[in-house]
Image 1 (cartoon, rainbow, N blue to C red):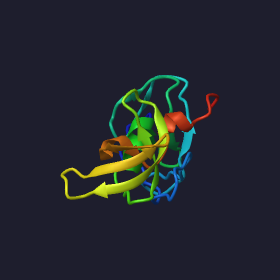
Image 2: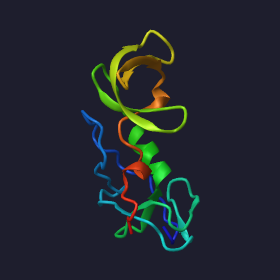
Image 3: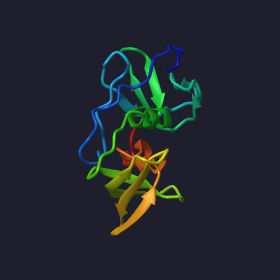
Image 4: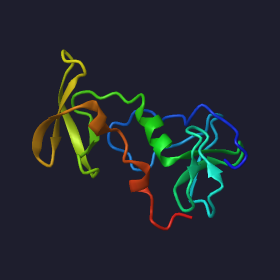
Amino acid sequence: TTSGTSGSGPVPPPAAASPAAEPLALCPKAHPLDMFRPSDDKWTCDICKQRVPQGAMLLGCRVCDWDTCGGCFDQGREQHAVFEKGTACFYKRADGSVVSAVIESIDRALTPPSYLVKVDGAVRETERTRLLTHLPIHLSLPPTLP
């Protein structure tokens, strides 16, 4: 947003049965968000209040003059994600790359719970912070997005 209005965050999409490349995104007043790259550095994320650099990805509502950066958008839609056995998801590797995965089992007796996921044909144990319901927005955008 260039005017500094505030909002409570993007409305997360319903939990998907399989990984989604481009989820439905809405502003706090339920208007659809448009993805764009600002042509200057005068834009601010209405969630984290950080300036967004020229050319970075934003999702915005022109009706409300409300915008969110990619990081806040990703965090908002992952915040309430629920994983169960058999859930298709994405696994975030230590190097930051992301690959498709499937939840094999969850040990909820541990705190925090431990997840067994099938990644690249092998089963590995991991934690919730490495699991995503959606592909991070910066990885799902075409390079020529306006």
